[in-house]
Amino acid sequence: MVYSLFGDVMKVKVFDESHEKDLEASINDFLEDNEDIEIVQIQFSNACSIFGEEQIFCFSALILYRKK
Image (cartoon, rainbow, N blue to C red):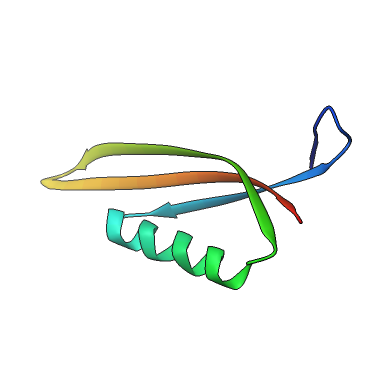
């Protein structure tokens, strides 16, 4: 948990998917299921690596939020 200057309790949710559409769906599902939250910040990251002849992608997002 993270405390802001105003003493509010912040929470963090991390998403990690291998396709950007899966990441989008996961985040949208989380937001639909948690309508009583206030988004403070969203951070996005992606990475690519090679394993043999296969490319591996990683799409990640971190959402910092608080309950309303």
